[in-house]
Length: 421
Image (cartoon, one colour):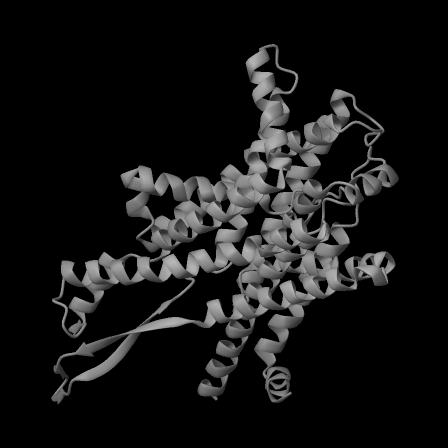
């Protein structure tokens, strides 16, 4: 309550939060504006019976179920971001650009440009995926209607990207993550209502296990997010102006999970890509290509295959994203320039090697723990037979992580304003 009072008394922070809430309301209004040419009743029945599309709906921020103008969510932007981060590991010039402020700004601009064709491509894949499921989901299937739908979906994605950037400018959290968070939370009341209607006293143990899995997930994510390894840093005596400052002891905190929720989002994006791509080849003239597409779709519908792939991808992306945001060599160079060193470790390359070793060891536990929490609901689903558990687990991972990051950003804003005062 004290924090809430401080928040309300600080005009800038209060205005930022109210602005973010307004953007979220605007996002939810757009999420309920359907694209013309879709049978809403048939679409709602289809999503309630298909777990794969239920996961896709979560990833889109809850916008896909209504097939709204923002049905694609921010998935095309995330895909474009993954492409440029992969290019940074392959193309030396892009890798150098990622180390500079102007270079990163240029890459962000290219990412936005790439989002447009990616949205068009993913929109076409989504339409093909829905049409391949049969039923009368589309009231109009002529070429003009399809092109209009694709243009609308692409414009909706760019609109969400603009909203996300406006949220990020308020320094209360990552705008894209907050939009996904808003979509998940908006679907929580309907999920609770459906769970209540499906409740059967004979399945009490199943629901207790479900609650325990959610609780373990929440506690695990919080513990993993807050856990850090503090590396002691000593600074030698330095001359500052006309006086000589003494040695200073500090610490370099390395988080157990440096990537936060990003490995989860990346993993889901990659998991959805093969099935979406396979839709383009279901009607191929080549038999082996058509069979490969059918095999890909069937494989991802197998919960064992899906769970193993999910675990591996989350673990791999934990290492991948950390390698993008944490550079031991650069940290070592900065410490050496500032006269800092790690006790018992020589400056320069030995320091960089030591930091890389510690980071890799932390990631072995952090990435493994994150991957285990990610697939825990799927394990519970296999033992209980409740399909909603897998979707709920992914949602909890994203919601808890985004909440922690947002609260920290708001507290930092409050501290800064109080210090200025």
